[in-house]
Image (cartoon, rainbow, N blue to C red; front, top):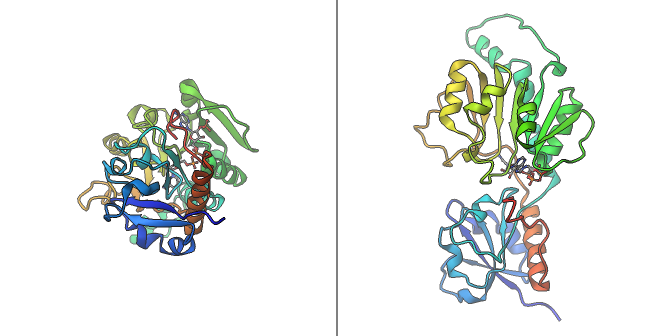
Length: 316
Ligand code: NDP
């Protein structure tokens, strides 16, 4: 017997999810029925949500929601929503193609730093014809905070290019060729020591909030470069500016911010040592989001835990 389509509410304060997910909403017809927040229909019938920066009280309106899907790899905006309840499974999207795209973004900045792209762009502005000293990737150690679905792909690609790669994770895990793993507070200090390019690929949790601060920057090799693609609140913005001003950091690529979109008057826009991108390092495909929603709806129907459910205790 065909199952009744599951009712799913779309919750976002920053994105028109009906428009963004229109192709998937059509594809999932007959399987999932999407409703808009507070559209007047019976909220008690809603068993599932799709959310991205939901309204703070959103889940108070839907007492029978059993699962909430993020539209991205990070589910922090659902996890930290004040009306999120125990018992709602929070699901994130995991897609190898996203890790590949993120890897391209990080490799672009890593090689840009190693090969002094900033200095060449500056020279061109003043029509300066001057060859600059070159260094092999082997002389530029990279540290990666986070060795999960995305960090692991980034690490192995950088190692293949010849960068010595060190990774930091919460638990010990096997590493690929050319990659050395570290854990814990002492492991973090050892991983940062002499690191020249630091990549942040951590989820936002109570432990990782504010981790990119002056104390951490001080442990890196002088003139290090930061590639920050985790979440805005990982970074203490004033500490970044101070580290850039003092020369402890030579530059930073920042893709994620405390408040997005970045305000027009924010100091990062005009800073000569900062490259700003609009939370655009990589995307999950719409079909991967649709696949996650469908698999989650199936799990809710079957009364089982959906795949890629976030561990509430760990916070990611
Ligand atoms: P995963 O959950 O697969 O991996 C997270 C990694 O972080 C794991 O290795 C985990 O350790 C480690 N970690 C978590 N907490 C700690 C801690 N307290 N100390 C040390 N290590 C810790 O996530 P993904 O790789 O899929 O994504 C990572 C993050 O990247 C996302 O949460 C998001 O913030 C960001 N992101 C940004 C995007 C962008 O466009 N800018 C796009 C996609 C993701 P362990 O392995 O032991 O569990």
